[in-house]
View 1 (tube, rainbow, N blue to C red):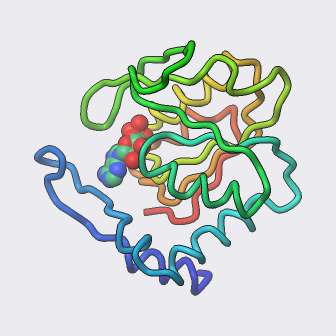
View 2: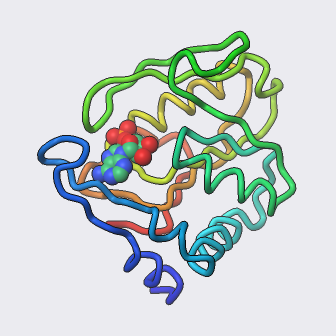
Amino acid sequence: MDKRIEQINKAIRNVPDFPKPGIMFKDITPILQDAELFAVSIDLFAESMEGIRVDLIAAIEARGFIFAATLAYKLGLGFIPIRKPGKLPYKTYKEEYDLEYGTDALEIHQDAVQKGQRVLLLDDLLATGGTALAAAKLIEKCGGEVTAVRFLIELTFLNGIDKLQQYSVHSLIKI
Ligand code: AMP
């Protein structure tokens, strides 16, 4: 394993029974507060996109924003926020989805992506895959192409990858 991935892996904090009993929450804040680890995680995302042309990076609030916005700056790309209902001020598209702990919905601005634009979708963690699939559908509703999907962490035992079979998915850390 890449030593840098090992370092990031070690920094992930497991918080049992958050936000509900039975959920082992993967807390990424120790990565963010360490300047070197935060930079390494962005570098690894950038390396995973080498040779892949995209026009925009879209991410799911809130933790996805942190990595995606930083990566967008590094790669010289625009950033698209995908948010919980009622947060985006302009005209939106909406997608409902199942979460590992409950159900929810996501929204995107209708003019966030132009027809045919190539989009990287990024989030901190892939669990059951419902969130990422909803986000991908929103990008497609706008007329965009989901060229690549990236996660910092993938919980492989939940098989979320099965929901994303039509996409090119890569996770930095598989647990
Ligand atoms: P899912 O739709 O089941 O793939 O859930 C993914 C979304 O929920 C991501 O935005 C994660 O940030 C969050 N999430 C789900 N399970 C966990 C977990 N065990 N630890 C941290 N975040 C989680």
